[in-house]
Structures are given as C-alpha cells and as structure tokens.
Length: 308
Image 1 (spheres, one colour):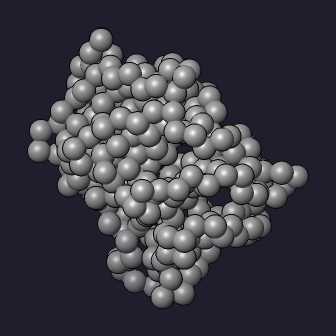
Image 2: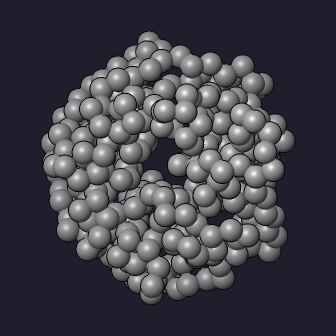
C-alpha cells in the first residue's frame, strides 16, 4: 500500500505552529469539503467541491473588544463542529471563545475572558461546556468541568463521551449522564504533553510531545499499546472510523498511517516524509482512510495524498 501526492490547495496565509492545525468538515449533501487553518489572528476557511474543481477562500479575523483595523489576538484553536444538526466554527483565543455560522454570515456567540486569562480557561485546567440550539444564537454556558491540574491541551468527543488531555499528559474520560457531564476515569500522564486525541471503538489513541502514540481502553484506562512513532512531538492524530486507520503527524516532518486492531495494537502501514516541513495538522478526507490532508508550519498549502 502507498499514497501518491495530489494537487494541493494554496491558502492566502500560511499555517501557524499550532497542534491540530487543520479542521475538516465534509458535507456530502452539497458535495463540499470545508477546511479551517490558523494563521496567527486569522483563520483560513476554504470550501472545495469533492472533485476539487471549485475552491472558495475566506478569511476571518479574531474579533477584538475595541474596533481596530486588524486584530492582533492569536487564535489558539479553530474547529468546524457538527452539533445539534448544524455546523459552526469555534475559535478560541487569548480573548475568549467565538462561534460563527459555518458560512461566516454571522457571529453566534462570544464568551469573553479577562485579559489575565488564557483561552477557554485552559490555563486553569477547566473545560467550558455550552448548550447550542438547532438554530439561532441562544447559546449558553451550561457547565464548567474542573479536574485537570495543568492547562488543557486538547478535547475530543464521540456520542456521549468526552475525552480531555493536559500539558502534563493526563487524560480524563467524561460521560454525559442525564444532561450532566461527569468524570469517569483519569489516566495519569508521564510529564509530556498529550497533544492530540482520537476515539474509536471504545479506544483512545493519544499522541504525546515525546513522539509516542499510546492506545488506552476507554472504560478501564488500561494501556493497550505504545509505539515510539515519531522522533519529535506528535502534533496531530486522526482515525478513519470506517476502516480503523490511524493518521499521525509530527514536527519530525513525517506523516504515518497505522492500522488499529481490535486488540488495541497499532500496526504501521505507511510513512510519508514532507521535506523541511514541520507537520501541524493531519486529517483523513473521508471515513475509509483512503485520502488525507496535512498542513505544515509556515506553508500556505494544504497537501493531499491518495491511496494507490
């Protein structure tokens, strides 16, 4: 098995050095794939037809409390989120959390933080949970989860399960019970940041600043597999839910494809080196894992690879 490199999408601005700096949302009803990539205070938003023949570019700047010509607030994360039957863009920054309609027609919500705080309260290890209606902008803060002793580094969810990780490598599994999210289990870290998470079949795949990939049982927290996957920090992980393929990207310039077995074992399938480029985001394009895209620090391209 191998992958060939396809035609890239060229963005207006290059990708910043941020973990998980590529968000992908596929709308098969409209035959459109949407991408979001951070550049400092700007998010590149790209809408492309599934065959790549049509590409539409937009940029959105993190809003400032005071009117300015160009915002200087750094965006920490930007993700296209499917929730309550709609797709919204969620941006976190030093100033707080901003949510937009996916077409950027309107800002839906702004949760402001004081100047001494980091985005979403992550410097204190807390997680903010919001209720989002099927339509409209009546978004409300419903819960604040406090369990991490270090800044929260990434979040991932599947059905009624939420998994969070922090800068010391701790991983916490949460579950929604009667509309309330409660802690289920905590997996202690080893001191290296847990930079990225992916969930599949009651398993948690975690990537660390040490370059390791680890697979844990979601309910017990038991370590099922450990792979010395990269020589530098893992910056992005994704799982193709239809095939069980795992994608990992790293600052070491490598993207690797793995097969996640039912036992939790990771089997290496393919490695792709992008010369002189620190990978910042990597995502499968589709559930079958036959194609993926990636971004790299200071590059203005979203690069694509297809299985051959």
